[in-house]
Image (cartoon, rainbow, N blue to C red; front, side, top):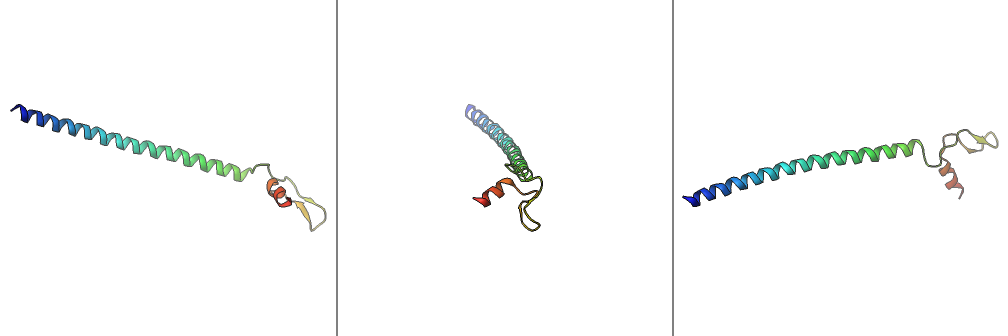
Length: 86
């Protein structure tokens, strides 16, 4: 009779262990999902910031030598202009 009791206890213990393991796995998945959302938000924010305000800034006004030839157009990235000259 003791053997049956031990087997039943082992079965209950293994069931409880598996239930705790399954609960932990669900929490891990939720935490990972949350971390990925935060990372995606940071990356999107940085990309938008660089697009709106490029490194080096943008030209504020046009600099034209004649009516047709403008070396610096308003809104053009300064780094883009510098890279074309090199």
